[in-house]
Image (cartoon, rainbow, N blue to C red; front, side, top):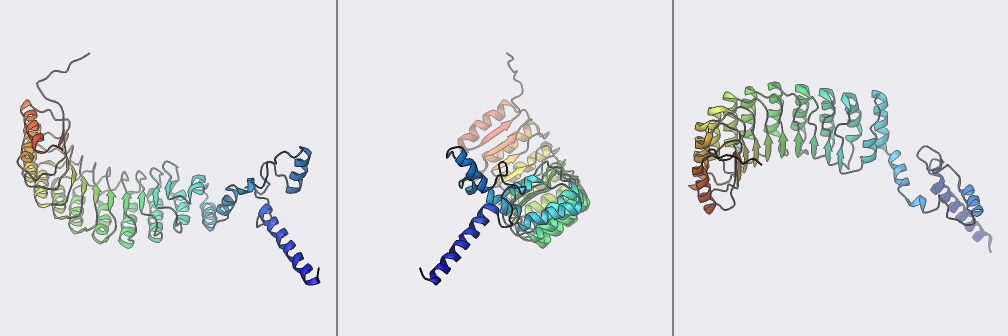
Length: 404
């Protein structure tokens, strides 16, 4: 063997030894255990061979097959810049790192509901999320993040171009948080779905959110339910809806939008030709707003689902709905349950559907409202025209329930 060949062989042996050392010991010279010690007792490779000989060739616990598990992936995750930035942020803000995030930061969906992050924990989490390229759906519901934490998440969303769905409901964001999210929606065009339910928003919050809806051209689904939005909010959001060209679904359920504000909101809905689903339940709309909604059903030829349950709509208001439904060709689902429209209101609405051969209605909800035999007879006739129609009601009055 020539000296040159011997030299090459020596180099190959040195490379093989180097590769073996990296595989077993890890790039930083430590054993591959998560805490720096060798796994399963911390025994070294030489000691494993001795133990294997002593057991008469029995399979070693720390075999080569062991090192083919996801331990190496965990090491990479532990050493990732994302994890490092998170741990540093937690240390700076004096909060305990959320192990759930560390385990799932490479998933497409991160669900961290009810984790008690608080404002500071949320701020720490926002640091690595800003550069995360894996998470597409983020659920941070019920984490007491308040306005400070909400502002951190909103800022993060201006930097992250991958997260498309966000749920920050029930976090007491307040009007400060609403302002931060409104600013974010004006600035970024990546978010598709946003849940801001149960955050204590008042009329002050309606301005930044309303302005955002005018300029944002990407958000498809927005939930503002269970807040404290009032009459003034109806004015602002009504105008925003008339200008918005992107939203497909909106929930304003369980707020306090009444009076003239409810009318303006209904007018905005009439002018919007993009929304498919709207939930306005439990607002106390009353008679005037019901009339405006009836007109909206006449003018709007895009809306498919409308929920106005529990809104203090009386029989007169139901007649306005009936007038709109007589010509409407797109509404598939109407929920007007738990309103004092009585049997007469239910009958009038159902009759308008009978008189509209182009009606698309498939689901009609009168739950909580007793109806008469005349209504039942009309329903049977309407079914002959619109076979897909399903009607829910509060039972037929004048009948007694049989008790076991």
